[in-house]
Length: 405
Image 1 (spheres, helix red, strand yellow):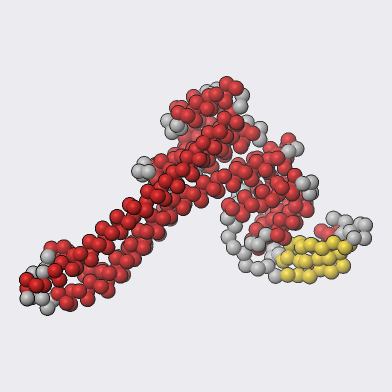
Image 2: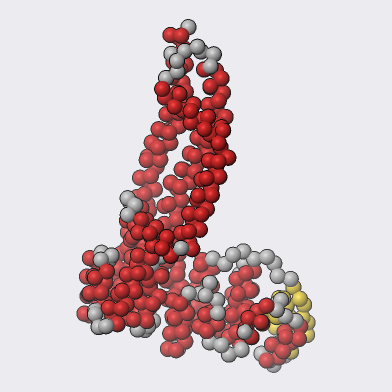
């Protein structure tokens, strides 16, 4: 309760200047509720403040996983260079362009300064630091190799974010084309077709079936456009909300996504890459297998793999080998199982799982590149058929105009 109460107090950023124990002038920033707190904090650090100025916080953008990955990489680099932990937080916080990240780092730094472990400080912010992140940091603190674990964690997050970005880019292209096609068709149906209809009404002849069909659709658009947009927009919103909030809906959609032609294979390979990369990283940090599996399922980004990981964890805890438990799940390619078996026999599971992750990450890269070139002709044919069909159907009566005259 004390922590929650302290978080509710409005904090400000104070720019300070002072002298250290050796009389050297030092400057910096602190986040605190008032000048007295800043003075007390600086005195504990051996700094005698001469000037303290309050600065209002700028509105910050949302903190994204990329921001956390960048922060982890910067912390790993500075700690490897011998920069103390608290000073590393100061440098990263001041150098970050997103004020929200700076506030987060100042809060974490304040917790660490009062005696909280780094992993314990991270656990107070589960929205940004998941159990995998906190467990690896905790393992690094316990083993005295925090800088090495942060470096490995930064590499893991960079690779994971790269895969996510490639999957999004592969899916964004066809989705954006479908949206543009819908907008173009809507404009044609509401504004262009009615103009043709007025012209055709003076022909005094029967119109072709394709033209009548397109004109009927146009009438529906003109009369009920608000309902069409409302149903599509509302349906999409409620569908996405149900997908995010309902666990059953997530499970159903994750299964469906894996069965989509072409894209399902891409998502499956990315999930396997993330699963093996996560487990490899946990093993390399010295985290026990059963404990490591707690964080692996969610990192795959698909509930099918999360549910399978729970079963694998139960079987491993009762003495079943990891390879056998993964085989019983029936979701892992044979190559992953073989490499895992070799790793168990040779005592290098982390190395072999890392190799498997490298392979599937390369497979994702190749598939994304192939999809980009494959989707272009498909989309051209789709748009040509859709827009061209509408145009031809509306010009058919004009082609027969000579017969009427």
